[in-house]
Length: 174
Image 1 (cartoon, rainbow, N blue to C red):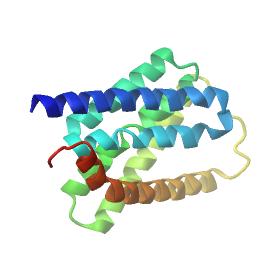
Image 2: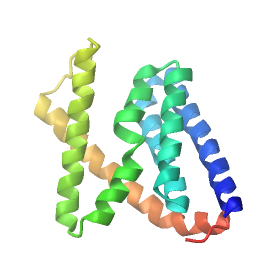
Image 3: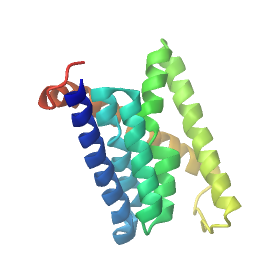
Image 4: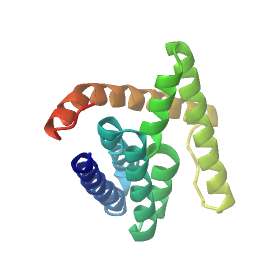
């Protein structure tokens, strides 16, 4: 058991460092901000699949806190903390607790829109100028929801494809 925990801790630390590096890169490549933060949001899924909820949460928390402390792009760190980083754990809970696919998607979209609302309120609270959207708000929300659905579907495919392989590679039993 000790060996398994050591492997998971090491993996979580490496993934947190990788996540911080991706978030840090948003300062260098600002046009890729959402993409880089979204990829960083995939990383906590690996220890979640291999070791369970506490390892996914540990990776998420370490990445988010280090990104806030060390990162030069606080906006990207906040995007990670509010939208992407915790999604593997939230997704796992929703999919394990709800039996109906339709209800699962309804809850996922509700969570997504509540997170978008929280992010919007934080932006307003801190007086950040988000500029002109260049499109009606309903279209912006629709595009965000479509992007979220695509992200979640791709996320599911990645986890399905690599979960068993990662477990074997790390020599961990389920």
